[in-house]
Amino acid sequence: MADMANKISDETIEYVGILAKLELSEEEKEAAKADMEKMLDYIDTLNELDTAGVEPMSHVFPVSNVFREDVVTNGDNREETLANAPLRKEDSFEVPRTIG
Amino acid sequence: MDILKLTALELGKKIKDKEISVREAAEAAIERAKAAEPELNSFVTLDEEGALAQAEEMQRKIDQGEAAGPLAGVPAAIKDNMCIRGQLTTCSSKILSNFRPTFTAEAVENLQRAGAVILGKTNMDEFAMGSTTETSWYGPTRNPHNTAHVPGGSSGGSCAAVAAEESFYALGSDTGGSIRQPSSFCGVVGMKPTYGTVSRYGLIAYGSSLDQIGPITKDVSDCAAVLEAIASHDAKDSTSIAREDYRFTDALVNDVQGLRIGIPRDYLGDGLDGEVQAAVTEAAKVLEKCGAKVEMFDLGLVKYAIPAYYTIAAAEASSNLERFDGVKYGYRTPDYEGLHDMYKRTRSEGFGPEVKRRIMLGSFVLSSGYYDAYYLKALRVKALIKQAFDRAFEKYDVILGPAAPTTAPELGKSLSDPIKMYLGDIYTISVNLAGLPGISIPVGRDGKGLPVGMQLIGNVFQEKTLFRAAYTYECATEKQYEGPAEFGREFGKEARQ
Image (cartoon, rainbow over all chains, first blue to last red):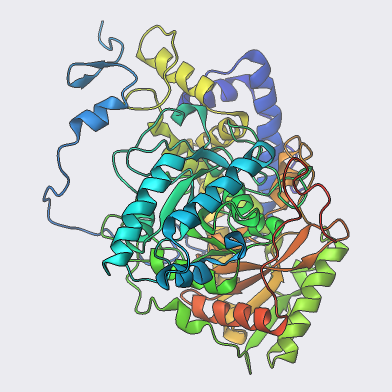
């Protein structure tokens, strides 16, 4: 391995948990730290490659945005959509209060 | 006549000729599935009632000349990450365990237009993250050839269903090998087409720049026919590509005279099982005898594909899976205090460990301070890997190698060491990074009777070259589709040698 120096701090795991919107138990946090350290050490093997001057490739084909007229083509399936709601209030999705 | 032994095209012909009714075909598959499911668990949802209703409707269409295609009336199974309107679509995750989509995936609609009777939805690794189908919230699927072993993954349910003759063909999705590796483990034919060939509309996204839907079938002819049915240019998928030629079945030609085949030396190195290497080398010799020019070459960068892939796929997954928050559909935690607590608890209870692992890794590599060092670095390596393939395809029409380094591992042996499990995808993953088509076809069995798959990789848009080579191999070996050993309560336990 090129670099075994990856040490994930408690703060980092806490921060990543916030970004990922996951609540981890203390036990899960320890496991996640160990997992991530191992994976990052593995990913660090990429540093063996000189990529100076290489453009990051997000797509294999030169795709660009595809535009179309903003015309409604689907019908009204409000009931079907709302039928999936974990909690609904009349014609709305119900969520916990967001503003105090 | 044993209906179940027929390939999809053979069955389609007999339905057209009125030798078999659509209902008989559907009933045969459902009966088989009911007998096999307690042992295999290939399906999350087996929709008997719906399938029989579709069968009646399809028979009527065929009788009235409204459905005349080669797959009309043939029963199929769909991986449970493709939406079907009104039908449970779970991604084998607790978080979608009650989700009924309001629309149908384009690939499935295309199949329905071609006359498919949908039997149900197949099991998979949760959100397609895994190589064994053991991360499913609905429990693992077992390999029909030997139920002590996994079917591979993530499209393990689809491959097991076809191998066990529960379905005449199936659709899978492939982000890093999820069609080709389980096809190899289950002894069926599976193809990942060129990125953009099959619409991803209605496919629940994992790694959007890598995901591609493809066919899983009993033989190469079926594979070409199913791809022909599902491939289309779709305005609803901005990465969908309008191809000049969709007539894949035209490539079912028994001729590889002059075809240039390269075998990467770096695919035959450390970690490759000896029996797999022997079977694949033997298969290459068959193609050579048929007139192909086969030689070894150095592809390069092989060992960097997996770390690049896991960086990119995890990054995309962490972003794609943000939508699962317990608001509009799916599972919501019963106890919460406020919105953010609801999000966090819902997601923590709704996702399994492998999914959480990848969301965490993805969130990390995309976070400020690490984005350049990890995410952009991986995208630069991806560019280098694409260049390595471009160089190879200047010299060769087809790249040949194993689909996976081993045959199917035993159940329960893979999840404890993720990196080791990820290494099982070493031959398939770079194909997704470069957007190329790849096919796995069965080329033999190991000493335990477990199937070995050979992978053929083509340049972008060269599916027809792959079909021609794979079909020629089938013709030369007079290979008939081989089902698993006798089933019942002892399903597949004594695999055929």
